[in-house]
Picture 1: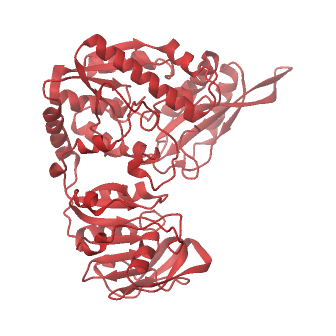
Picture 2 (picture 1 turned 45 degrees about the horizontal axis):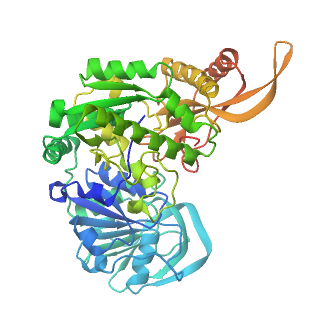
Picture 3 (picture 1 turned 120 degrees about the vertical axis):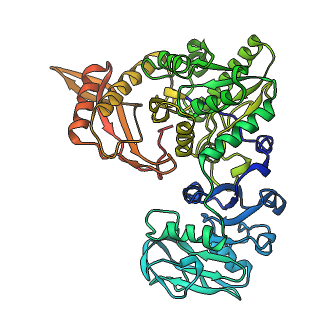
Length: 531
């Protein structure tokens, strides 16, 4: 269970920007795939950050961007309130690539011709190259691209050349090689675009001339030095859950300041079966960290009594965590800092001020729903990383596979896998069902192996028959997904025999359950968790 706090302007400023590698700034217009664009850039071993579309040039320039990407977005560039960018982006000399809305914005701002199409284009299209360019070097003459747009560019701006087209879109890519300004109407970041990764790497390496130097070994060295300089002789506590995020965060900080760190493990009563004992044993015996265990099971149940709304659950859990950490800090005496395993996707999904262009998906209980004023200063060494990057950092630090490869677990724990009110009885029901799901999947030989899998207790009840009697009992849903980083996910194709075994065991062994369903929804449109 990861415990994180809001990513404020102050927390961003904690990192000395001069120590960062070459940075690509991604200006977000509320795109569904903004995080995926950032991931594709990092897969090319180039560091990337997402900023809101209207970030002033001074804020962008502070990062010394080696390139800028403009994302897609749900709105039209032709509307009276269309979202825009600081004009200095175009005149800065920094290479720019606009994607979908971003291309339309370039066309609109720099003198092209743009109209609202009578028919929107969504889905796969045949992309045909029509002119050579560094952006499209090495691409096949024809390939599949993924389109999702309503407006259409009828004529590129002065100085631009049409680089590609599709059957229904005469201008699917544009470029001005001299000014290094480019736009693509399709989405190169999604897997459905066959040459998408090549387009992104061409832009980064060939157009912008960025060396592929972003790697986790240098990140560890840099971060340890930053923590040591910032904390000095101060005492630090770390919110420890047992998950990979808090484990890596704790190990990074321990490497920087050693015995100045004390880890606080809060047993909320919202954990999986036998999880509390396993967490304490792993971190005391394997990682040799100083761990204090706090039994707060009754406190969290009391805070959640009668609460149904998932946002309210997350907020209450976040507030209670902070209250406990501040109590423990006072007990330990002279603690000044709190370490948390905040990750980049949590910040973006929670729609903090740093991601204001997008719609809020949910408030991660420790990102968007915590007290504005706190006694402890925040240390978030992983706040700019994605999940797979955190795992790689864990490997660099020498953490055992049992910790590095552990499947993700939500910060609010089972509270968001009990739909509706959280009670002790309902927690026991979902905990028992989850143990069966976890045990059966981990015992099976599966390829690919699911990235995450769990049970959800729904508020639905249905009629059933057990023995010769009628039942009216609960529905449990099983969720299993495949993913690289949790930003996008597909439902795992589990063998029917495995699903049958899971269903039979849950109905037979978990009191009060007479029906099991399997969730076959991808992300998007769903999220991984149900709440």
